[in-house]
Length: 124
Image 1: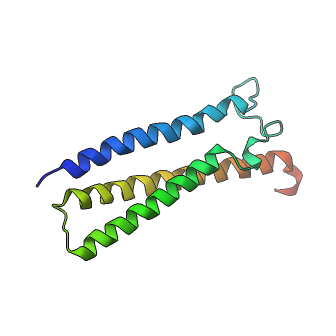
Image 2: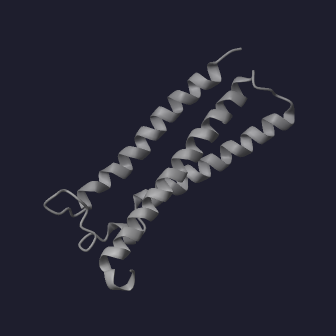
């Protein structure tokens, strides 16, 4: 069984994942931290408006959808797991769906922590 699809997909994941993570991590300079190094949500507004993080999550979600569509097309065409194209689409779909989900959930966690820090008396 040739593994060229998995290898190429791993290279693509490493490149795209590094670019996406770098773009998201570059937002840290806009985050205000307290003296213990934790995010000070009362002074940090970055989590409350559309940022590069949201754009990256949207791009990753669209890319995941396109990979699922490509996988479906090639499976309906009759290809099997031995096809490098099927290997590529399976790997991309799994990895980017997990990355997109993790990024989206972590963004929501930061937003909810910020809301709780700004309006603590509203939530008990």
